[in-house]
Length: 94
Image (cartoon, rainbow, N blue to C red; front, side):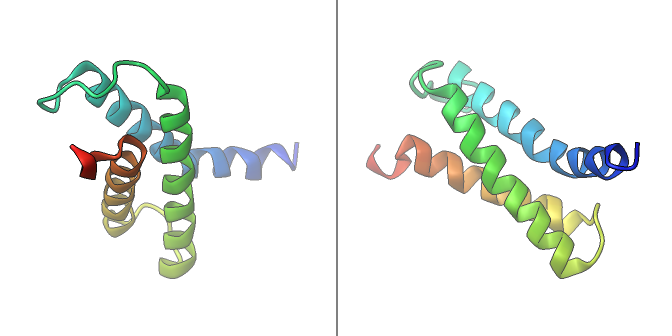
């Protein structure tokens, strides 16, 4: 029981990173952002990379700001997710 509570809080801390990753990959895969990027090819890997970098960003902001839920942390999460997506899709070549 005692291990479940901290694990639950950690999963709630990292859930926004997973949500942003899923929405971003789905939007780019369906062409919502103006151009379709490779369909669903490799989408699970992109979700994993974006979730990983977003989670590291949120954990870093938690250590830096001392508190979860700050808008600065979520803004940095969105910027980190967008940069990771650009690197995964090699957008500088297009």
